[in-house]
Amino acid sequence: MKTRSLGLNSDQKAKVCFGWEHQKRLMISNNWQIVPQTIGEFYTPEQQAMIKEIFEAAHNSEWIPKRLQQLQDDGGGLPKYAIALFGEPGTGKFEWVLTGRHLTLRVDGDSEPGVAFGGPIFYGHAAQGFNEKPDHPGNVYWYQALRANEVFQALDGKQRSRALIEGPVPQESPSVLLSHAPEFRAGLPVEEMSRDQRELVEKVLADLMAPFNSRDVEEARRYLKANGGSRGLHMAFYKQEDLGSDGLWDVWKLEGPAMAWYFRGAPHVHVWAYLSEKPLTVPHPGPRSGA
Image (cartoon, rainbow, N blue to C red; front, side, top):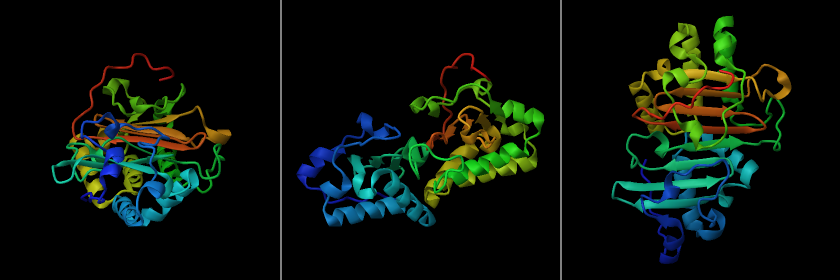
């Protein structure tokens, strides 16, 4: 997918266009405006239509209504969100970034080499208020947690004891996207699961990537395969922040040498994700509480 020029005038360019190396290009947060100018107030109707076209092209067509519903629930709709552009179109270094409450979405036309989805992404949803009920009614992403919990239910007792973390859930910050050495990754190695259990993990991965367009998914799958596929991942569930104390784990994480996908479903859904071609190497975090 290629990003398109929005036909910005000089005043618009001065406010929303930045150099490729600008620090905001790869920033990520659960609730932020990359620039103060919102889509509905700053752009002409023609430009807004093109922005929506780019937004839709970033998604699996079946997911567009769901994502738009999430934006409406969380931020008042797409016009209330903001975009910024980095680099120059046609140079091989150009990226379009949309931000607002519960979404950081990147469209890069493969300008960012070796990184799926253009860099770190965030998505979330508070469908019926800040503190969601245990079954998360109306949450467009909760199906991902339900699928992950199918994996947990398929584990035997010893596997569950390794997969379920008693200690605190990971803190929400870009650091949750860092992949540690295998001995410091939380949870159960997928490599040690049975074939049927691994097939369930593959279904989790398919659900995680379902919102995105086929080209981005193909790239993400290629990078995952290059780093051992699902067998190279660890899967962890967190006992704390279990809404309703129902044993349906709201917080869980998949992590491998070049991927981190962190789902935190309490008090509502927040998801941080990063997937790259080359392994991420960071210092180990020291002893992990409750590991």
